[in-house]
Image (cartoon, rainbow, N blue to C red):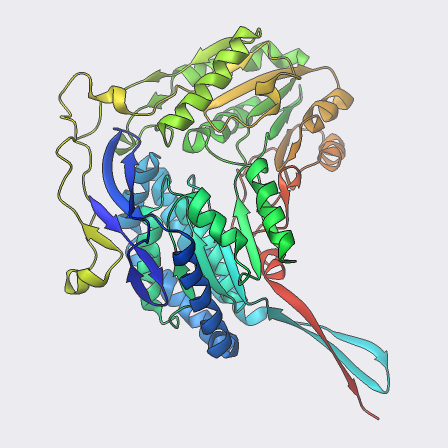
Length: 516
């Protein structure tokens, strides 16, 4: 097991409120501890970030920031397998998905390392007597409250842009899964960033997250989570007249017309809901299908759902466990209430509890040469860890079988609210007009897809759907590092990823030079 501490002003520190247990979702066993931080810890981090920004970071040339980000990316790449193992054990996602996440954090840092030297302003032709130009300048200290579903990816996505633009940062990862983040920050800290430029504070949302959202020393705040908490974060930021970027989830539709290429669509439709056990903001959780092919599509989706392998993450199944018992109960309640209301379970996968080996109790240790100063301290194994040969040990994992629902009322809760689990609802439509109406008839607007061989229809429907990203004959589950990502309606506002993210964490400063 491991014990993780905060990283503040270049030093690893204990949390002022003690520690929190970290649980392996595949087995329900304790695998480590993180610092439980409060307002005093957050205040130390924010003050350190402000000192670093004012004294050194805002004067650091873009080329130097770029070099540090590239070195950080190289360090993470060198330890990608280690990070993936930690991420898999901590979140419950199959190892190959965690390996992709480890590659993605590297890609984010590489992309923003390249972008750091290309944050340009404009010249504005006002008159012969004036030279007018703009610069994009960093905002100061950016706060980042990230979720538990993609800890590594979200760290790269949110810190990469902020650091490239010249901001100092304070990161608060989710308490449910953040051990890989702590290790990633430890590795990034060796890339030459001045003390205080990167700060990490772990703890609960109610304690550390609230303190960060409330702190007057933060100049920009990025938050990913629920609309309810997002609204609260907005209120906190409003008190300080501070910009925010909010990514608040989705109920993303995949609209399948009768002329769609089903051979191409089927694996994508399934993967878009089972990726990370459905715990993805951009999960394709609604399939809207034209009536002519409704029964055929349901039959073929059902076959695929029944064939899915579900089990402990270390067995590298198609679908792993949910992140916690709380999340398991949430998903179970959604489905039970839907069935009671008239929905039918067309298919469910079977959970195979047989692991590939005994539950992992530890991770590759930090460099032994200076372990006492590191984020991850090795603890003795948990004596309560289950025997992998015991017939009842798998019941401790947080598994919910991927479930396909039909006969779903479009106005029902499960058709309109984010489940955040491997649950796919199928709803028929008659024509293009109804498809658009159903796609937009939810409070979210994050991602959507249109499946059709009709080019004109593809453009019409893509234009009409209210979503921040729309795919045609494909589904990217959030898209690549280069693609601006964010929502409409209650999915939030502001954009992460791509060059658009750099605009969120900078301000335009205008210079007017009188030549007379």
